[in-house]
Amino acid sequence: MIRPARPEDAPAIAALLNHWIETSAITFNSVLKTEADIREMIAAKEAAGHAFLVAIGDDGQLLGQASYGQFRAGIGYKTCMEHSISLSRDANGKGTGRALMTAIEDHARKAGAHQMIAGVSGENAEGRAFHERLGYAHVATVPQAGLKFDRYMDLVLMQKFL
Image (cartoon, rainbow, N blue to C red):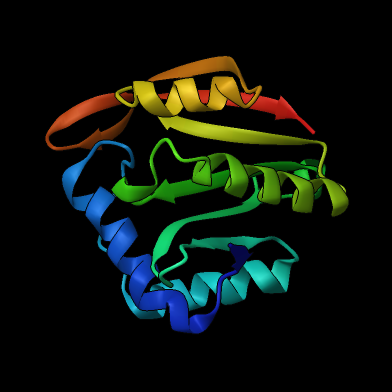
């Protein structure tokens, strides 16, 4: 089931995000998220008219989350969005990511967005392939844009017109 994130989802979302923050180069962020951070993110997305969605399994467990917001500040970017998506290991390869992406793209399209940007770690080949399967095209690589685990990593920008 895909639904809007709720404040009571904060512990599970924080645990999901913190797993990837601690163990991978999927995100360049190295600062763990608190439950308060997540509740604030949910409220901010809602206030801006953007989606913050979760995928919940039949057992009630969080399988993934996805959200989007304006790519860069300023009125000139008001139709250019950037998304974030994270899945639990149990959700990989089961259509959860596709379902979340379809839902946030539909929400963004209905809200007037023209395009969606994915910022993918150069070390995340699986993430790049996932986005390619969804119709995202590689538009740029920013060499050594991120620093994590004492090494520089490229940022791959991918784009899909909605």
